[in-house]
Amino acid sequence: MKIVYVCSPFQGAAMWNNIELAKRISRKAALEGNAVICTHLYYPNFLREESEREIGIRGALRLLELADEIWVAEGRISPGMAREIKKAGELGIPIVKVKDPRVEEERSKLK
View 1 (cartoon, rainbow, N blue to C red):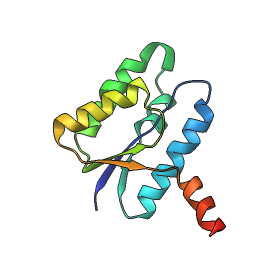
View 2 (view 1 turned 90 degrees about the vertical axis):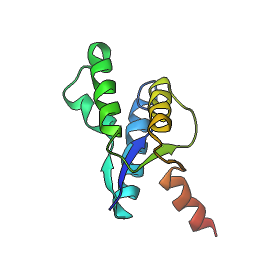
View 3 (view 1 turned 45 degrees about the horizontal axis):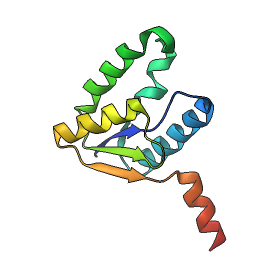
View 4 (view 1 turned 60 degrees about the vertical axis):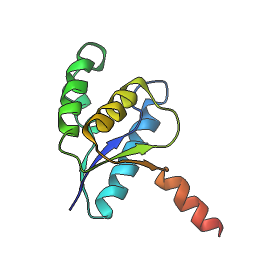
């Protein structure tokens, strides 16, 4: 069983949409038999985004060290995502670009 670290946007006007995207990618990873780390679904439950964000990012980067792969959501790369991607590169962790599973599902229905 691989450990997959999910890297997708969190902050911004579309925060709730970003959370749903993170959930969909995490679900896909889990259903494919992976253990999933998705820190932006975890840390906001007990850390204040406005004043304690850096604590969460440092914790996330530490957890990233455990990953076998980092799955990066296709699209806009946020500053937080850029830090995670850079760290994964430094650690030699394979970077896998993933599409939104909902988009993939809709495409398969059209075929």
